[in-house]
Image (tube, rainbow, N blue to C red):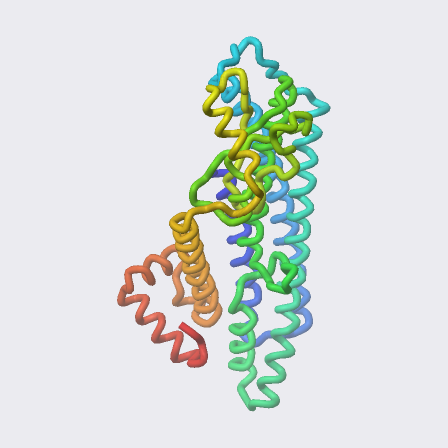
Length: 347
């Protein structure tokens, strides 16, 4: 998890660096030369990010794939296979090709996020000048105050990483957190499946997680036939991960080492309708966890707004979240200061 956290931290840091560049326009210097310098700095920051993210992602995918193959071996041993009878060879054509395909897919997402981040930051630079001109001419503000307000408005949200199908702009660090976790899990699952197939096993089990989403509930807790040749079980067509941050995986299911009553139970469980069968309690708990995640996300959004308006007074995100949760005097003072500057903001 440390490598994953480090990669996501790259995007958090880059988001802050890019918004700091926009924030630097507060001094009122909107000359063409200044803007050109900032645009060049954006290119340099994004280029650095893309290179570092690609390198770290390759390491995460490779490590996760190998961990998946190792996990499959241990699962087979635990099921009753003699370790010496298991073919543990990492065949270049199959395994390296599969890992590379996942890396290529992940790198495309890195490039897409980089393009969106660059475009968003550059647009903010250009928009700051236009908005400042409009405020100073139409509303009669001083050039410096007009620029300060324009920059605060533009920096009130995180740098965009992707535009969702519904048009929502997703901050780069949030988007890439999903990308990284998804491909890390996919590499692990693919490594496990290929090692299982390599040893002539066709049946696999997708683990059961009590507190899960509606989508995962349809597929979890079943035995599948990879090839589809065993008609007693559904064919493995939808593989985990089923979405970003999915925690589902698969393991070898060895029928000859499985008790008869468990085989009968799996036949029933595996052939149930592909519908959400969660209990009311599990649904309720899942929704509670989602609300908690939403609250944490709102705290980050609030921190970004405060940082845009009060860059020198707002602490780092972790400190801000801690002060807010404890309702400290420092947090209350910060809220008061923010309201003075921006009375229309929601709290």
